[in-house]
Image (tube, rainbow, N blue to C red; front, top):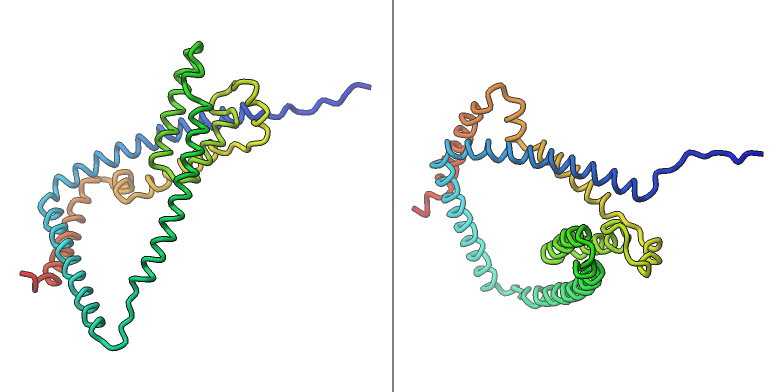
Length: 240
């Protein structure tokens, strides 16, 4: 009796490759959209220089006045009989936050060192292709360590140790691969999809792609800023 033939499933390596292709495509699309939007916004700003400057100056002045009012009200409360100092509570909360940050900082340092030692380019001195790939990975690792969250670093740490960042690790690492779920690329893909949605939903991009004459938006913006400046002038007239 012949053995039944089952359809061959796409293995993990093929899945990772497909996700990488999708990521590359989305990155290019996002880059194109952001470039077009930025160029259009530069044109818009060039027609609204005076309005933008005055609106910003008035906004800063308005916030300053609001802060002064807040400080005045606080001073009045402090003179009252039932005033309670909240500084102690704030200091306690700050201490808790600082302690938490210190724990996270130590954990990030530990994960960073583990990942860096595991994928450092010096390990692949006899393989030029691997050196280039390891350099890319360590560059990304440094970026996440310096600017990302602890969860970001944990995810990329798992990605490195899964074997998908560098496809063929040393044999002693292979035993760890099956124990680690690699979801870095999937998360990267999901984040890109969200970024693309946000980029496409941006009002200036919609104007650029949906208006018959996108530059007609300049008159709409002038009307908006004229109204806003008028209101801010009224709110800040006492400071004059």
